[in-house]
Image (tube, rainbow over all chains, first blue to last red; front, side, top):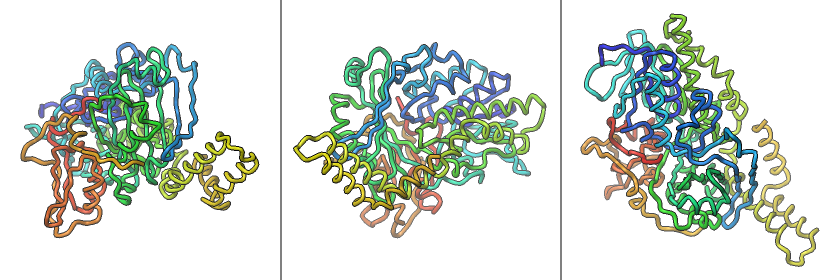
Length: 435
Length: 97
């Protein structure tokens, strides 16, 4: 093994690593992919929603054999207080199209499938191998990796760091810092199994149609966070995530939070009778545009969660990971086809290409959102959901109170909670951050 | 919200692990009294790996660790803990993820 030199080594077999390895191998590069799990996917956690378009760009006919759970026809956004949810639901028959746009997936199964494609494209995939350190030459150029297997350095012209949110190699080499507690969310999740027909009936679904709920409010107890419920074929993924800095400041227990979310009257009935088969925890990059680290250097690039490429506002991550992996692969293949060396200067092509893609454009659009939601978390996650619930209840409950008095009471409640200036200022700041 | 008593053992029992006996991937630096962040881990670790011993020091038992990295983000920079990945093939093995 050590005698061999590879065109590229990819560290990690998640979405970004698989996309990079597939892209390079299918362009004829000699690729080695290293994964520390027993099989690709065994260390990976996601909600999970797959965005078809970004995978289609890489594997156009993925629908033929990829393990897809349900295609989404309904999206529910909920603002929750302790006893209620106020919702915006969007369901459309337009989503029942020949090539649907979004699917739920189960990562362990999906990643195994993606890895088979990577191998079929010609890459060597080595599992149960933890990369312990990058190998650098005297000038600081990455020339390969050290692993926990016997043998010395495995050499390559370039190393693609697809090592996930806890990318140790990049931080140990000084390429980037450990993410700040306010730039990552801790999400905990359970897999609830139910018969397929029970899920179909509870959510009004037929065939492989799916529904997702995303919820904010008092469920996060004032922390910046989001709960979710995704329907798979025979299971429901239920989870909640909040910023690590908020957990540390409030000393809330993540699994108590999850259990309280499960016990909420709006959620409980949807899960009734389910059998839990797994409990998972994972960090999600939330820092947005301002948290993106240096993306390339002499002999290396970084992709996916390791590069903090995650759009927290739209809850998109795997598609950014996949796209950054693909673009890194394309850039490396282009440099190699010109017979140029994998220097920092040449690898800047990756960043230039990424900057032009939706990945960086979307993150730049929301660059001020993480700070806004973080500094105003109590207002956005406690005060407003409660006010909205009161307003909605006031609107629908018929009790003989004249309507004009009901409206006044609602307005007064908003002003009392946030003051006129506070309401205007929250609205303006939100609008500016969204712009 | 209703207070519920959660038994983390029941949750972790669902998971598959390959324990690397005698080679923990997380170590707590010896200390007299824990820093606020280190102490916070006894509550915010989603696998409840951290506990305060009878001398008031924080100890880690990483057998149920899901390798999320919360403790790393809170306590690695300060040197309170040493955090590595388990050896290849060891640690949590998600069936679904």
